[in-house]
Length: 595
Image 1 (cartoon, rainbow, N blue to C red):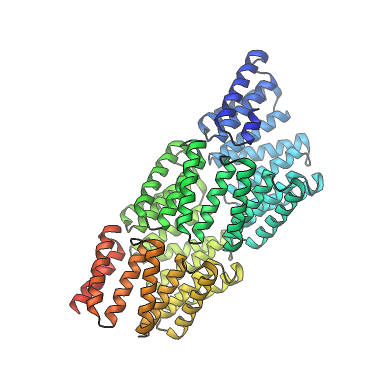
Image 2: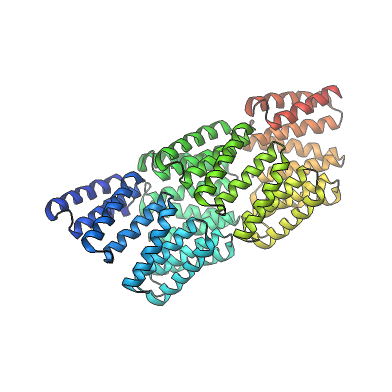
């Protein structure tokens, strides 16, 4: 019954049932009976599923010790117990203990059970998962590929474990940024699971969820969102509103909605998911903490940095308390909080936190882990925000070189690093280095991600702006116009990126002196940003400043100065006195008054 309830997504009831079963077996059969050891393992699993690592791991460790003593090192149950403990270590982020245990278990199962035993194949899969968790895709993918081939040969194409291997390999391909291979394999796995297991099997629904997320990663929101909606509806119908998988689907639909710029829907879904996670899983469950982190990110995306930072701070404190200082999720929270501080312009808080996070990730995950490379990138961006390009550019250059070496030339993160380095060169005024790098990044993104991927459209936007900075309006304006048209077609009229393109095109028209086209476009962009993002969003404040500057360019100080004054007051209230955007508006207002 406990295992059934766990399969239904229950958390507290299985623990109570497993605890009662263990107590009964100890009393009737004794501490060392194999069934007692099995009950202890099940209780440990229930604690792990509830996120109670403090009770799960000691219980797994005791069970393994008892199995070794009672059954011997090589008994299949002992090997299973060792495998379970390795998984528990991995769940806590303790990969230093997880990987050696996975490696030992695999070697023991090969020796005791043989290369082709299903448990041996399971161990090979688990070791690949552990390697993937460290970011070592060079070892993970060949192991996933071998496991899939072995399962096809031993178990057959349609065995559920074979289908799981195909899904895991697709996830690994996605982690490398190879969305073409990932999506193809996800689509095949979904079709196979529908055929073999049925439309409503939980594994089939997981495949649909994974495919939707891959579509989102590829920027194909036209396929991602309907699939997220269908998967959520199916999980509600099959598993119920409160099953953890249903909560995951609701979170993923929120994420896809956020990517589409539908901030109202995203916030509502994230808020409901957090409330449901607290009610179903408890305040301290890792999934609840992830849900709180995601809601904070959504607030940040809407420009509500006050709520975002408060929620990031709480999530970080909770993850430190529940998961420990060094858990990868804790380090992720620290990184997110630092980025939010940077968004408010509080670089005095942001930079030390980015520096600490980078040092911690190097120590815990290693120099080459993708999260470490992300921290290095973020610290470079923070240095850049202070104007410290002497530290920013070498760090961007190192991060790019490391990502090329670790992830490959075409990984999306590598392409992002190339874009960021180009931006840093542009910030120094070195357009001779910036423009060729922007051009290469755009070409690479078109080739790797496709013409319509949001990252590709961002590259086109950045290149157009660099052309404008170089005074090459003959290339800047057509590229701005094309990027705006593409974003309207792909993302919709109201997506924040579309509004950015409209703002940039207006600025390009202004740079040519074509105020007759610039001012109406600035006015429309401001109205749209107020409607979509709200009066106080940083992008809205930027649009108000830009419109004031356009009025000033026509000599209409009667409209320009009051608009600058309002924008300055709003920037001080929303962003702070010292925020870079506040300083820009103050400088513009002073120039208008004194001009």
